Image (cartoon, rainbow, N blue to C red; front, side, top):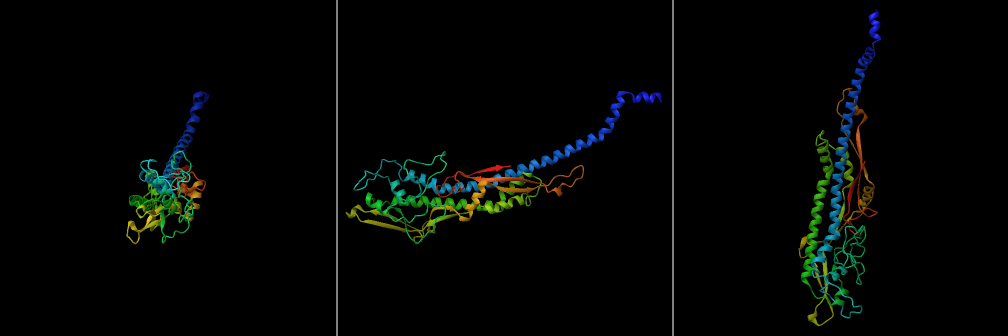
Amino acid sequence: MFLGFKLIKNKRAQIVLPAILLIPTILLVIYLLFETAKVSREKIRHQFALDTSAFVELTNTSQYLNAVAYTNGAFPFRLFAENLDPAGKEKMFGPKDNPNNKTLTLYDLFYQGGAFPAMDAYDSEPKRTDTIWELDFFDEMEDENPREGWNTANPPNIDDSKPYPIMSKTLAEAYAIGWNPEAVKLYVLIYYFISRIYEDQKSVYLKVSKGGEFFRKGYYLNAGDCKLSECGKQGAKIFKDYIAKTSPVYVKIIEFYYVNPEDYSDETKTITLNLEEENMFDGKLFQYAYVDRGYINKLRKLYKGIDINQPFNLPSNYFNVNLKKYKPHNHVRASLQCTKEDNNCVWPNPTPKYQVRIFP
């Protein structure tokens, strides 16, 4: 009995006994930390998959809207500036009476005739640092302007049964512009080329955006624990309401005013080209594309961001706790923004500066 009392009084025994009793508790804590780490790891992995997939899906829309903005303004502007007037201002036209000593190039004459969108100042061009690219159709024509109202987000109904000039009658008379078949041919070819670009890029975009395919495949590749047919299915549903909708404006008849100097007359003549009757270039010519009225509201919502929720599965755990009943899911807010307040940088003033932002 004395020996037992002596052992209990031993300091080492006082430490070992509680330690032995604490070992199961410590092991439980270790298991708990391990299982918690597993849950956290899965949540982080699926959150990354969600963020990446949402970014990739909206990037398709961003690229498409930027591409449409380019075809609306920057492409025709640069192509006509480089080809209608390749020599700069060395080749000038002067008005017959020349009241203000005003001179214009062939590029100026086409632009002021309403042929294509550009900037008002001849020497101006869009810059990367500009918040808005002020490219639009010339709307100060002295003639009757058939393109009136085109420089708006909601253009009027286009009457494709009437001709659309690419040279102003007033300018043709004032500057004695002769018939220029090469310039007209260039105009038609450039806009046919732009038309094909627009139609092809729209076709590809609608195909890859159907069913949130990029979101689902992106989630599948990054999550790696679900079937391709089921991966990201719930999160992809929201994108079907935000597929970009744009409508093109086509014309079928164009006309060119000119003065024939061989007639020794100031009378203005007209050459009219009916693309449909001549069966040329698919019978129509692209002018620009605009955002559908219903999608403008969607663009405003996209500017603030759309909420995407995606459930995910958690692995089994040592404690056999059914975590599925807590319905684990991740959330992300994804936005598509450009530099204009209404988030419509497609038309007018087409500015290809859409970008995707992700908010936790």
